[in-house]
Length: 281
Image (tube, rainbow, N blue to C red; front, side, top):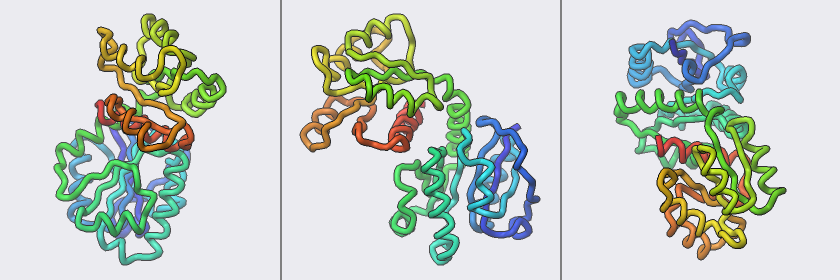
């Protein structure tokens, strides 16, 4: 049975949901989802009702800052419902902005439900929303619930997801492996040739591929992957240390699943990887 946690700045009495102590509770990515809401509404009730119909259980925490503490840093999906009335509540906006900083820092998985008519206002007021999947109202509820289910299953299996880093810089590859090791099974090779030897014996779910490598460049590796039976659909994210329009254009012309600058933060890297897996699901 799945568990949905409603997190609100209002009291439990206003939403009519019993507040439960979660401090000592163990969570499961497939069973527990955190929903952040700020005002009761017919739409919010519809979300809860549809989740309950799929055998989810609803719980409430009434503090958007401290109330999120038991769930932060765990492999759980957060769902944020943005009601347009929130734009008039400066304290609530400040609290949410602070919470979003924490959510991004610990690399929490987050879906955002918004009113598309207020998209620009929310993005301006809450820059921490940038990069997270957005779902516009009116919502296709059936499709949304299906997406939630897929995402919770992905979270539950992410520690079993295998990533291969291909980079001729051992120090950088080691740092990348360290950044990802808490979330994925990570292997490292230091050349394109070694990548094909590894892939001939081992299955992986994603390749992080250095664009600039001697002998067998990232370009040549990707072209060969696309021509190799069994590897032609393997997701590839290019790693590049050069941030200029010409290089970026060259990278995108190869149609990888994505690219990321080597100077990017750990949080940006994880978000990019999650986005690729989400699109491939």
